[in-house]
Length: 210
Image: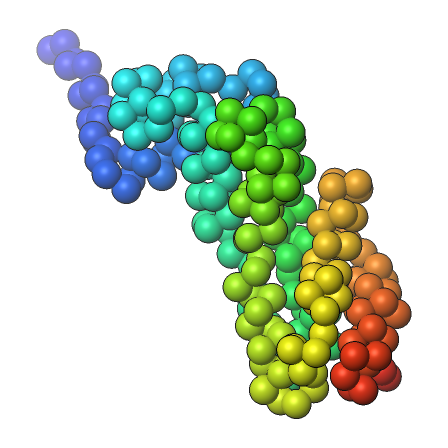
């Protein structure tokens, strides 16, 4: 008796959100492996196991696809929202979590923005930075500061926006320069030696550490 060949594997057709997620995951992987310049709609389609027309029905060009992939990656890798009971504790915990989670995201996002994505989408460099990088952390930052405001630690209306943004601007700068998460001592320096003293100037609030 001749053995019959094993059945061919069943391929499940993907639709809607499942297919879109697979495409955006593939686009992110292409960005990481080959970079923005060498990424093509064809290479993403091949990695996702679909066809180029499927991609073009959703995104008009690779710039729109890359932008969507950056947003998708950010949304699927959320940063923890700490609630330690103090502004200092929240900032230390958030900066540590954010730098671990986003260390691989920021360099890729900025490289894509500076390699032509921002020009193709008719964005200024500042707008590209805002949309691919800064906006990722704003809701959490507002939550941290609002909690501190509600506890009476700070008055957010009296603190200049540049001061409030400073810890996160420094975190992004360090990650772009070093391509790795911040060390704990660097995070503590940002919070204790730079940020909290400035907050105290504008609020008369906590200058000492825990």
